[in-house]
Image 1: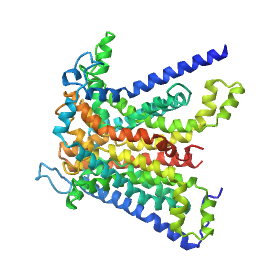
Image 2: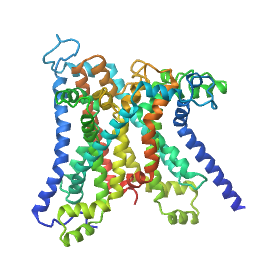
Image 3: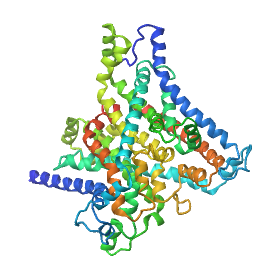
Image 4: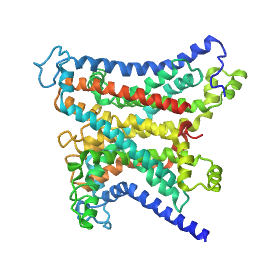
Length: 275
Length: 297
């Protein structure tokens, strides 16, 4: 009796779980499907769930824009920004986690508050500075901006991870005569690796998806995928097939990357929250 | 447990630590101060990109003009609404979904991956997909569904611009909340849940007295990170409504953008930027303090 009741509950929960999951995922699924429709199918009412797939839209997208160029720019910029931010954040978080002073908390709060500043509030000066330093429309320029905007969150995340590392382990290393450099690279980093990995993953995702600076500071040479998709948005609003194909192309790499790294991302993202 | 390293080399240890901290602090100081100083400077100038005759010191005119502008009040209100609305939906929904996907059922792993997927989609794409493929009054899937059950499709972005933008943004951030909260739920001791069940605690009591308190730190993390991003929402509005109709879906970030780039009023936009920065810092002060307390507790 109770056995069948439990089984029923499990099926009910499973059904709810799947319905909710499909409902949330539906827009992405529909976008991918629409990318394989002809423009006629794409705007048919009521929408067709079954159709003859075609690569028409993809051919058009590839003919209109150099997808690989945008993708290369995005990857390069994201990796540079993430690597640079980690290089700055690891020593900073180390100092704050293991040598806190009265000012440590204030420093951390201040760092985070710089992230809350609306980009648009400083757009004009940043644009003018970028122009005069020839960083406008360069991957380096956009990379630096992304590095700076992600740095506070990266420092904060690393700080919380480092705080989880038991101090006696570091002290033991020091007793054995480890220099500070060894203390960080040999003792601390391996221990905090899951946290560092998920910080890097989050940063890569945020860089990949950043649109505001991408749209305002790049035009052609260094434009990332966020700009690529913008070029398909307004004037061609009703070419749903083409729009969907371009969207799928812009999203696919990071979505697949997110799926594969999901476990790792989750493991670190919860900081000390999991205790 | 002792949380600070006993400084090994006395004062030298601390100086070394300060040296480790300084590059990040310096670079952030430069990044936050120089543009801020310039924005502050422009905000007191008459500076319009299309009208070179307008120049010179403006005093507080830009601020007076902005603060008495009804658009500004709307933008402020919309900013707060957007942040609060999305937080309520994503944290509330996130907790429920985290508990749901903690249950054992067939294909749970795949269902979880589907649920967190929207977080990986770039904001411009999600806005475009929702606007055109889902909510388009003629061709959208949702409109087709409404017609199928005999209702008249609604032009959501026209009639409920703010609510619709909020919904799109919530769709992007709910998965993030689920991602974090699910891990926290999973870390809960199963013996503890089992013990509560043995003691006769129903599902509601278990949720209220065991799961929810356990989630409080994770919830704080979600609120913290989401607020940072929600305060500066831009792409979704830019793609879907361009702040309209009127200023119905204009938040502060978009208002400044509209001033600076559509009306070429650098002075006015800079004044808006300064105000936005002040507001961000007020919120940051409150929020971060609360979060820091909760995280250290």
